[in-house]
Amino acid sequence: MSVHSEIGIIGGSGFYHLNLDVTPDDSPDYLDLPTPFSETVIRLSLEKLKGGHVYFLPRHGIQHTFPPHKINYRANLWALKEAGVKKIIAVNAVGGIGANLVPGSLVLPDQLIDYTWGREHSFFDGLNSLHDHVDFTSPYDDKLREVLISAATDLDMPIIKQACFACTQGPRLETAAEIQRLKRDGCDIVGMTGMPEAALARELNIAYASVALVVNPAAGLSHELITIEKIKSVLDAGLTDVRKLLSTSLFKL
Ligand code: HPA
Image (cartoon, rainbow, N blue to C red; front, top):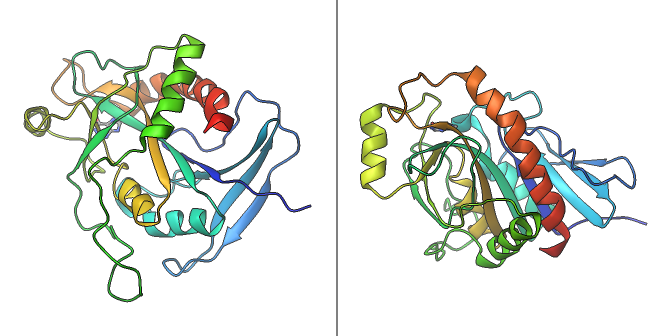
């Protein structure tokens, strides 16, 4: 019997394998999907868990080969759509701008501001018959966010239920002045991979939500330099919480 799923998880930095604390029913299948936007196939793993199945795609590649500005967001989203995915939970490592957004905090953004440039950010490039100008007033799907909020409540896991996600170009981190500008703009967290992923999902009519894990205070907000070593130490503990949240919410989406 062929199995599939309508749920896709996109893993971010440090999250290269799904490894949920739900016993797998079977080993994953791998789907290698060609897309019009990539010369190579996009590999999805179909994870067969007790309770259901889910596709997993680590956006940076399993060896973290692709930096944020080099990720082929269009090919990734296209492959998920081809596989039949209708709902995506994306995981993002971010810097905290708001005073309460300390390392280790889990955040469900409800808004975003896109500061990226030069990325292939739309399927509507005039070369295909798709139409343009999707409504993006609310970039994250409220129903998915509600399920995640209620899973966090069931787990007694603190979660920040609203935040504005600033998506910067990277791969360098921001200057202190840039963070002050993002703060004045009303942003609470800053990451490099939120866009165009969210908008491409909307263009393909896939419901999309992000679980953001704060891994450092944003630039200039602490006296310490931001180092990869410090980020990694927060990631390890924080991703355990993210996995718990996913395990509890996945099949209620
Ligand atoms: N800025 C941008 N992206 C990030 C950060 C940050 O401070 N931390 C993790 N991803």
